[in-house]
Length: 300
Image 1 (cartoon, rainbow, N blue to C red):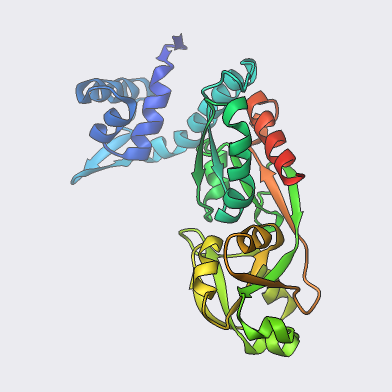
Image 2: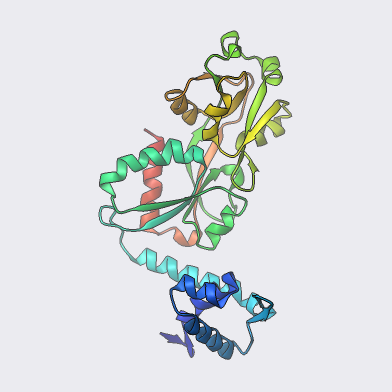
């Protein structure tokens, strides 16, 4: 299909070429031959009257004009994708749709996994791709590379719509034979005991609990850091260390591992876990269905 003399298929080729900065890799992503991708680049250059990508050594670099076109073309493709998604009805029983969700291992373990068990027969063809949280999560959503971002309210993008998934308290967890739990953990013990802290994702982003500790001006002895909450039972086992953990996950873990649970010995903020999506997806029936199922799971 052409619009003002431009084959609209070339817009996707343009986007992939700029992302890959290689004709070979772009051809592989679009499942076309390298000569076909080279021809697409030649047609783009002819239409826009610019080289768009210039070879420097083994890599191609975008021109200033190409960089100025990148975001408008990406937004155009996102709008088309949203339009096609919105116009199609969604039937979970027959859908083969794949949803890309940015979610921590806490949400995956405590919410998504039990939801998938429930939906195994109700939506057998629906597929999920779960991406680890990072500082780029909001950008992935904006670029259409993630359908849904599940994150504490502090980490949401103020320019995109959100929906509350759940509110969650934080608790203390430790090895079940840790004597501190039998004695009772007061503020002095909280500061004296060694802690295991979680830095989330590949960018090692401070967790909600860590941010709140800093805001409260509370001190603790962090002896071990790890990349996910589900490592905590192994790192706490056989030691006198403690960790902060979401209430929902703490009780699920304590049912499977030798963990003790206690209240934090001072007032600690409630975490508001949000579901965020691109504003172009407000009328996306499939995404609305997924959010409803996630919300239902947190209320069970």
